[in-house]
Every structure is written in C-alpha cells, then in structure tokens.
Image 1 (cartoon, rainbow, N blue to C red):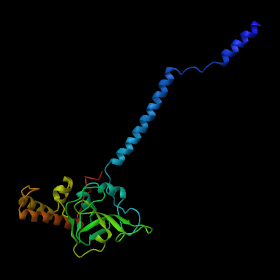
Image 2 (image 1 turned 90 degrees about the vertical axis):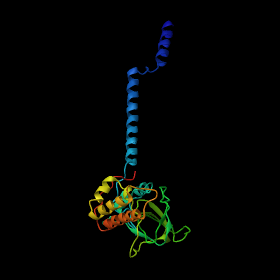
Image 3 (image 1 turned 135 degrees about the vertical axis):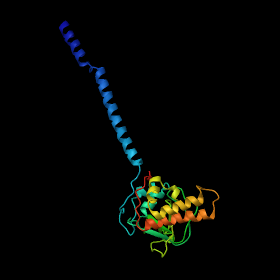
Image 4 (image 1 turned 60 degrees about the horizontal axis):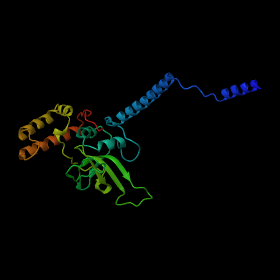
Length: 250
C-alpha cells in the first residue's frame, strides 16, 4: 500500500515538471541579436532615405515614348521645386535632346508643381523646354485643348502652361527669359568667362552697374545686364561648352 502511494507521488511529480527557465546568457544573446537586426534595418532604411534625398543627376536621355522628348518625371519634380539656372543652361545646350516649345501669347508665370514662380510674364515667342506633356483621357471631359505642359525657362524656373499657350513650331527669332549671371554657381561663371565675348560683356556690366544687384540702377546698367544675358544665350545656342552644374535639384 505504501509502495503504491509512493509510486503515485513520483508520477505526479514527474508529470507536473515545467521547462527550465532561460539562462541569463541565453536572454542576453537573444537581446543582442534582436538589437543587431533592428540596427541593420534602420541603417538600411536610412541609407535608402539618404540616397532618395541626394542630388539628382541631370538626365541626358528621353524618358518613355511619345511625340515629345522629356526627362524622367522624378527629376522634373525635384527640378520644379526650386530654381536652378545652371541646370537650365546645361539642358538648353545645343546637343541636348529635349523638345523645345514656344509661347503663343504673353502668359503669367505660374508653377503648379509647387516651386517658386517668377513675378513676371512669359513673353510671346519665348523658348522653353517641355518637361511634362499631359493629355486628357478619352473618357474624360476636355477643357480647351485637353493638353497641358510643365516647362523650363532659360532663367531656371518652371512654368505650367495650357496647350493653347504653347506651340512646338519654332518662330523665326525665339525669345528667352533673362539669364541672371549673378545667380549662377561660381564654377559655371568661371567657365563662361573663358569665352571672350561673355567676359567682355561681364566686365562691361560690372563697370556700368558698379556692383549693384538691386534697387535703382542706371539705364546703362540695365542695358549692360541685358547684353550679358543675350551673349550667354548666343553662346549656349551656338554649341558653347556648358559644364555640368554643381548645384543640382535635391
């Protein structure tokens, strides 16, 4: 009888046995492993964010297919969030593939992409680069021509245009937005001044304006400033070398 009771006691004791608790060293190893995995994940995510927010290289090939040659839309979004006159000069280069457009009328400068708009007007026959061409879907009601554009001006700003405000047919003498030499980055200024005509126009402008960049200036200063913009445009259109800009869209 006592033997039976003892066997029953040992059986119950064995059946109710719980797993041994994890050792302190096991817990430490697991904690360290989890920490390393989390750190790797954060590092990888941070790296992707830094890559996404870094400067965007200026594209040189058409994106997609269609009747116009436009840059990658991600680059356009970055470009039109600010003002990049150096990028504009580079993209207006003679050998660049981008489709050019020309204003059919005077139009208020407006940037629907969210970047700053110039407080002026786009002039009749002004030349721009087509960055985006939008067409209304066949199943939607069209307003006007049903076409819209995002464009880049010679001064580095973007402008949003309706289809009827732009033509792809080149006029005899295309106009341009004014190129502000003082807004260009220093390496680009130095490169442009390697050209004799540009350098002479620059020195003339400096003499007439005497360092003035705003406020009341003389008529001679205004004319010299316009002349400097003109010779820069002629240089770029004529195939003059424009180095890749150091200030890029971010």
